[in-house]
Length: 272
Length: 269
Image 1 (cartoon, chains in turn yellow, purple):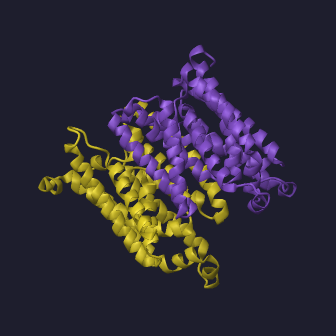
Image 2 (tube, one colour; image 1 turned 135 degrees about the horizontal axis):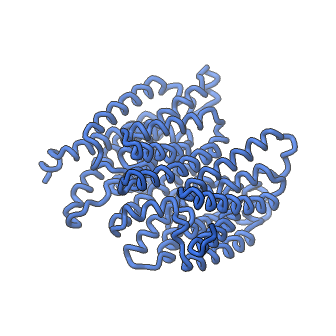
Image 3 (cartoon, chains in turn orange, red; image 1 turned 45 degrees about the vertical axis):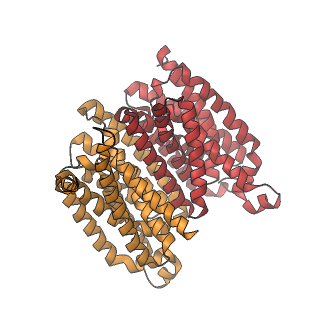
């Protein structure tokens, strides 16, 4: 059975997408939790779902759709003070979801895309187009390189903004760049577990890692490892579930989310 | 526009808007917007579990809503507020994805659960909506003082011996219940818009808490009526108009407020 698992092109693609997405999301997630921007991250995911719906409607690459709208959303959030950002996130989220409702409606009624809502919102890892794996991997690498370039001032600004300003860091520029990275991480996660579940990949592993270690770099490494392990475990379980209920595969997004949340529960149990 | 088969939709939507307008005021005041977005996701596992196990939808929604609140409270014990909320949201959605898939109605049910199908409501949806429209204002009215004081001045609330922890739990429970009952109208995602859009606008415009509360309810009613009317006229989903109009409403109120900041000080939030 394991031979079949690794030989399958669909599975290879799924492993590549979910692994790369979990890697970048884990690292970006640590910054997100430290900066208290979980809501902003989720709002970007909801806005990007409109892009996913648009790509179904137009028949274009779904990553392009997710990221395009995610980028638009991060522009909307950029330049807000931290206290104000919850309100801005709320506005964006509501409007974004409204458009998602409309575009999904059109995708179903005009193009007859069946199960459009499930595909966009809860992911379709096993039916991703063959080339998508390498595209996601390449995007994750680009995001990672940008993050490496700005990680020192960004970390300082996330932990102590006043000190970062004193040291001459351009905190507003950093915050804007971070939002773009956040949009990218959310996009890749949306390719893996779907737009509204992408928050699980972004916040779950990093929240667990931050419970296990207080050192930021260790937390990032741990979050990336936990995220990738949970994603691959989820893909393997979903593949195996075909044998549990004959003829039907349990949703892979559920398994990935479940693995992440169990990891988080275990991390808080160990801490207690 | 008011054809007999649409009438149930209008009635249910009106009742739901009454309740969410009321609850939304406290959401904005207590800055629980993210919780107001996460807790409605309990409707996902709730509705799907009810279908899976053959329970009444009402029972499934209630059980899931309370489960969501407990989960959120447990997560909040050892985690920053926003990260805990995000985790609760992911857990509820993940469970919902599983139950929906197992119950075999996955693809068809998802759109309605997410974005609502107000014109698919029937006479059976009116009693729960009526109960909601009565119970939410009643309970929140009883908790008005602790909730208000706890939001505006936690120290003063503690000084007066008002227990913030319990009123907060009660508040979250009401929020979750309200969201479950709003499900047929707005779906799990856009109940957030109906709660925060009008209430946010009202809190930006009104000068006193009571005026803000009344304005919030009035705006919620206006919003849902406009969304339904536009939906009937265009044939587009009502969820689109709810989401976009709520955001526009809030944005307009914010702009108006910043345009005349000097007169807004006392009591506005």
